[in-house]
Image (cartoon, rainbow, N blue to C red):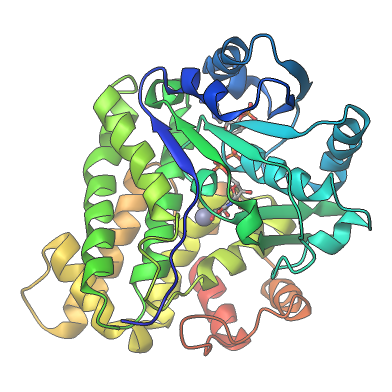
Length: 385
Ligand code: NZQ
Ligand code: ZN
């Protein structure tokens, strides 16, 4: 097992009516900005619950955050927060809203050009306003981690920013607020969570038995509960398990002390930027293709995954490896996500253009061994056509 420091300061309120508890975390005299997206925050009832919990507070609303939050559309919120002297931010939504709120929390007190904050290492972030996250879509894990994924569409950029100061102070997880999710978003959430676990698990053996067993536990839950959520949208325990799995999938726990990959995520960002694919749609295509192309480097963990997750113990190694990838693809499809670009009506992917963007963004030599070349990325993209 590799050395690690694990520190997760986010307090979690989980369950029915969990949103009621958030007021206890915010000082009575705070000026609070509530950040949300479109109809989802209202339809789910989460926004109403937040407004009820914070009755009597000095509140300002900033809605309209769209998926893959765009830097230029967030800036007016930063201005508003400064003007109203906001000192707390509560995000109500999925990963896009939470990430936007996290970025705003760094931008509001930042005296220089906020674009300087959009740096992967998050080096310019010295101070943030406290953020609380009320989740309506379990997927990103953003509610309990230190990342914010931002886009600047005008510049064709989508990138992650990481800094411990971006950890939300609290995460309120009420599974009943996910009942209104359309099937496509349920599928997206399950596939994204599955991919988060694989990015931290399906690398090479590093003696992390605890991490492996935790990751495998999450994968089993997703495979078992995910399809049920599609047909029983109001099954509380199904929603609760998916919600907690999504949070634990990317809160630092399963990735501490083991190698991590993240190449599928990084390549996916370029596809979102160029072709507008939703985050999980990129992953549904890229993960199976990535496993096939990078099979030699991932052989041992892929065999372990095949056996422990899909029960593949019979037959030769080559057959089991192919089956493990096939089962993964079939699961994503069963969650309603096509695993080839054509399934999203995307027929003209310009592989060279994607490779150019990756190179321009310095995304070469990625992966757990820093050995994923641009040529491998081209091959991966070809297999998604
Ligand atoms: O905007 P609203 O009206 O809320 O609608 C949203 C949006 O249209 C809707 N929705 C959310 N909750 C709902 C609901 N509709 C009905 N009922 C509800 N209860 O769902 C749509 C998608 O929302 P979005 O927030 O974009 O989805 P998700 O949570 O999948 O977040 C995706 C973003 O998170 C980033 C992605 O890159 C992408 O930008 N990620 C963030 C990570 C992090 N911070 O750690 C890691 C992830 O890998 C991921 O990259
Ligand atoms: Zn993701």
